[in-house]
Length: 633
Image (cartoon, rainbow, N blue to C red; front, side, top):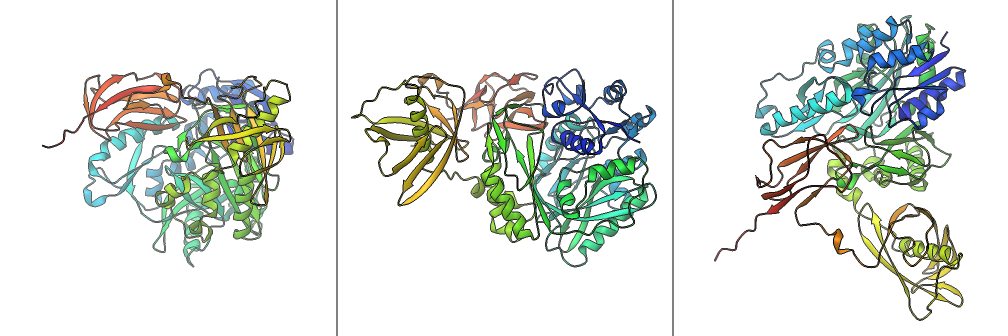
């Protein structure tokens, strides 16, 4: 009987496993790197063990340290979560050799399926060889180990293949400790559909329906749902048969997922993930089960019922990321001041109010899940909950999620993996409430006046400036102090308080909730630089006049996110000639690699980036002086 479980992972999945363990009366043990010392999963565990260091390679990917931590803490079982060592057969063996219970499939099954190249061979699907020609394009470069979109690159031009292979190997090695990659045909316009399986050691295999995971950015899933809607008759049966065949061929035990690309009425086998998936909550909701509890039950040797429960209804999950979708999904860092969603939906997260989002790990903040009798009801409930959620801190993809769920293509179940390639511009176009900055100014004005720190000049309107994030648009608002209170042209100010403003516009009353972060201050520029959230819109209070010292030289290349410089273009030095679009600098942030490109053809006049250097967002990396084209006489 399992009495104490160490989760060989971090963040949201560790918290998720701990929740079930607590319900079952099982003690919990957390691991943590130095940046994670005060993380939520550490605070929620009964015991915690430090892994000295910051990077995954030094901490969560060290199988020897993880096994030692489990023994030192008195755990008798290890749950791998997902990512990191979850599909590492040698780690599974090391856990078993130490006398611990491995909550996962047998090492032989992991070896058969965790390497995507060997899995394809087992299922009769061979990847492309090394002699790729232009006729094979487009192709997909893919990491053999791990998942989550890391180590994946679409190649549409043969000249780019070698560079993308190198980038994929580097990213895969950093994320999974294994740099093996392979190349396969890239199928355009398909749907990403997967089958959840659960098997015991007594020969029972549960096929727990389908999930559609077609909405992806950088080949990483963003919105998932169960069951996959509107599949062509017979396609599900083919996927179920292949999923069961994969389980029985490998002697599979535990939870796993078999993934397919559905296109032209056919299901193309992609891979089998020998672990719990990020999107497992939608299957739990539809089948009314706890997959983690079932994993524990199977690991203890118990038999599953002959048949799984009957499915009911529909579930949709959205992944909330700290990233800017309008800036190539650049990861964001900083303090998460507030994270709250309505109780009508499920929230799985590894963060809470006041936590810091760092640069070392994945940018996912939380998963939000809605379940309802129909797909339409579930999608509507999730979109509404996200719209009402309070997510205050770094820029997130929350607005993108809401717009995606309400897009006609998704609402009509006509989506495919190219959804964001087609619609990202419209989904990220700025759409800001014009009265939100006024509400912020009024709330802050009344907040200051409560302390007697404001001198009123009735004849002169007060002027405040704000920058809306992440679009960067600036707004100037004016208001006045009158004998009756605060007033503004074109609106009727009904109520003003530090956290609530009610304005009447065109006969319609509108409520604005206001939250300000950055501490109390006084004076005319009391709120300069502070973050203000008005009905979810993020605003930064600005000084009335721009500081000339903040101006950058034309052609300045700034770090789009905090991270580490991992590569600089070969031979790149000050004075070198560069061409527009040429990759100059590679940054690694949150386990993803990002290229900094030359904005124009010209000369590199400054280079501040160096391999190994850690940079903050906005740091000056280089300057490119563009070539001035002389007019022909």
